[in-house]
Length: 428
Image (cartoon, rainbow, N blue to C red; front, side, top):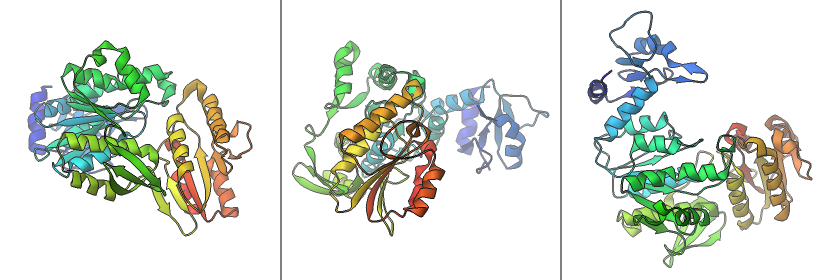
């Protein structure tokens, strides 16, 4: 198949789809394969529901004129996105890192959107399938794009760079996550810094937190990084930003200006500073940056403050790993409140062979910080001998909460995505 032909059709149709459960009317439908599904099995359903072109990589029973047979449907989708990206003459900013990718992406988008029309990655469309779909949603009206790059193994970021072709980039931080695949932190560093390597090759701009010891050590150790002159530094000292109070929202001083945000968690300070640095680099008016910081609030189970009839909940249950757990707990300890503080922590998943030890380390971290009111939930935590209240699964905890009403507490809820701890708020 000639990609130029498919791209000419995309310019006419201007819509792609991959899921027959959603609208496919008037789209180019790509039959993708995964571990538990084969999109080719839905080719006729897509045709019936009004898709104009169906890209297949398995021959069908009949040769419909709308079917285009390719060697690999995913590769065709990616090549279409690459072709489209090459026509876009706009700044494309890539965000990757272990923690804070989505929050940083959203903050940078909102700051830049004060000056430009900015597209951002929607939801978690940050992998080898989601990124092409994100790129294909960028139309000629956009003046800038902020794209999130996720990774679970070495080479993922390089692959995403080749598709998204960023000319600006930022690594939020590097921590322990997806160790089942990565095996060790060195492999995480190697993967995340693939973004830097790509940007250096393309003479792009790299925003770096110059107070992050891990990132600065990486720069100093590798000549490719240490010799590059397009690093734009940011950080609390560099940007003259510091926390005034946490109650539980962050109050900041930026160049002696008090900013009262609606953002929870001091771990979000560096994400806020990143948005300030990028905004200033692109010459967004300072007053507009402040306006965004004062009005921005997080949702979707990420550092989300929820007030119920019984309690205040900090819902940070979108995901969890040892680094983000410690960030959240440290911040929770610092919150000024007259209410009793309680933590509900769920298992951290995808950590590989060292998973139990990493959970034990977290329990020791809780003890070191003299945490008393903590509930642990999940099969990994349940195996560890400790004095905290433990539940093997969420269902057992739900039964406990129904019979033991918690009230007048400020509660941190955090755990891995598969734990789905956000449903606990109904009982709190």
